[in-house]
Image (cartoon, rainbow, N blue to C red; front, top):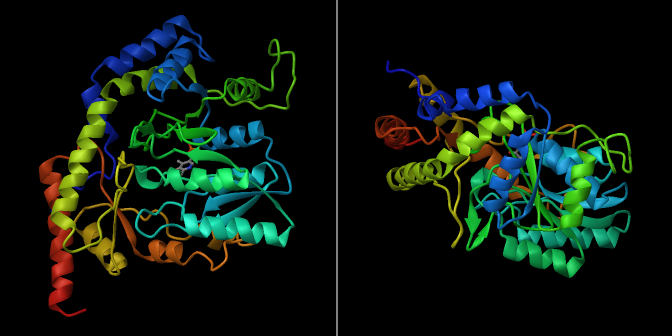
Length: 382
Ligand SMILES: *Cc1c(COP(=O)(O)O)cnc(C)c1O
C-alpha cells in the first residue's frame, strides 16, 4: 500500500520555509525579549495591514481572544449570547466562563454557518421568556468561509446586540471587499498549529476598529494594568502571545498568500472531480474561503470514512455532535425548533486532507478512493 497522506502537512510547509524560521528563532534568542518583544508588535502591525488597519491585540490563544473580547464588552451573568450549535467548543465555553448564558442557534445547511432565521427566532424567544437579556452574537466563520454578515449585522442592529466574529478558521478570507477579522464590533482568530495561519504552539489575536476597546484588551491581557504592570485598573489575566511564536508567524505570513492560492486551487479541483457523487462545499456568492477544512457531505459518511482509512487517507469529522447535545452544554437554551440542520450535518460531514502542499498525485488518491467507494456502493444498490 502507498504511504499514508497527511491530513495537514506541517513538515512540507517547514521544508518550504527553509532556514527562515531557524534564523527568526535565533534572532529572538539573541535579543532575549521573550515576553512582548519587538516581533509581537511587528506581527500586530502586519496583521493590521491585512485587516483594513484594525487595532490588533495578540494574545495566548484563540479561546482567550474570545474570552478577553467578552470581558471587554462587559458580558455578564444574565446576558444571553447567541452562538451556533455547530462549532468548536471554545465558542460557547467562553460565554460560560464570563458567567453569561449561551443560546444555541441552528446553522444554514448549505454553508454550515449561523442561520439568520434561527437566530431571529432565538432572540425573539429569549425576549419573550424574559429571564435573560439578549446581549450579543458570536457568528463563526466555519471551515474558513465568512458567516452571512449582511444578515447577522442587520439582526444585531435591529436588536441592539454586539457582534463578535469568531474568525479562528477564516483569517485571510473575505466577503466582497470586507475581510474576515473586520466584521462586527470585534473579531478573533487562532494561531493553533493546524489553523490556516498556524504558529508552532498556541497563539491568538483580537481585531477591532475601536481604539478604546483595543486599549482595554491590551490592559486585560496583562493583569488589567493601568500606567504600568503594578497599577491594576481592571481584573485582568495573563494572556500574551510569545515573542517566539510572533517571530515564527511573521515568517509564515510571507508564504500565506501563496498558500491561500494553493488551497483555493486544491479545493476547486476536489470540487470539480467530486461534486457529481458527494455534496461538495458551497461558498456564498461574493465570498472566499481559506479552506481551514474541505468538508464533503454524504449519507454514507461512516462507511466512506472507513474505506478511506483503509486506503491510508486520513479524514476528520468536524463536528460529530452539535454543542447543544454535549453533556456540558445540554442545560442551555436552544433556538425554537431546535437545531435540525446541525444534527444532520453532524451525521454526514467529512473533512478531507487539505493543506497547501497536497500535490496532484495525493489529491488524485483521495478523489479516486472516494469515487471508487461511492460507485461500488451504488453498484451493490446500498
Ligand atoms: C480553533 C478554534 C477556536 C479556539 O482557538 P484556540 O487557539 O485553539 O484556543 C475557537 N473557535 C473556533 C471556531 C476554532 O476553530
